[in-house]
Amino acid sequence: FRVATNGTATQIAKLTVSDGAANDYFGESVCVSSFGGSGEAVAVVGAERDDDRASDSGSVYVFRVAADGTSTQIAKLTASDGAASDLFGSSVSVSSFGSSGDSVVVVGAYQNDDHGTN
Image 1: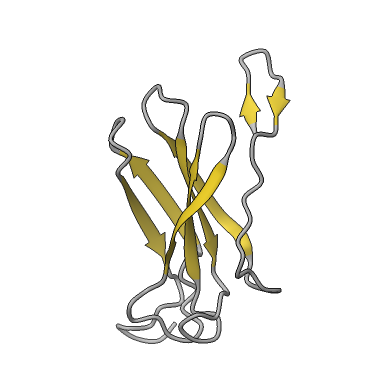
Image 2: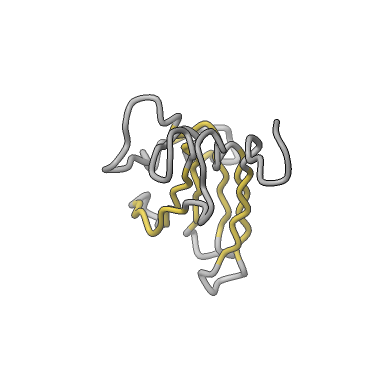
């Protein structure tokens, strides 16, 4: 949604993925960052129970949202060491670098047990 200073809200995009499945928890975590004054933004959406690496290993989808609301999925992130029940994508954050279009995405996987059990 785009929210004007007068409080008027207008839906500008609906983010969906082609490989989504029931119980992926797509949208459990979200974050958006704008590119300076361009009107464009990058949005990251967690799907902590996606099963690409293993059951509930999790993933994160990255979208570019244009000023007119057109959205395009530009990446799907998974942990290189993803394992069952890691819940990668349980938290997400994104920060853009000015108007360059580059971003840093930070992803939480609170059930990751590489250094012990949870």
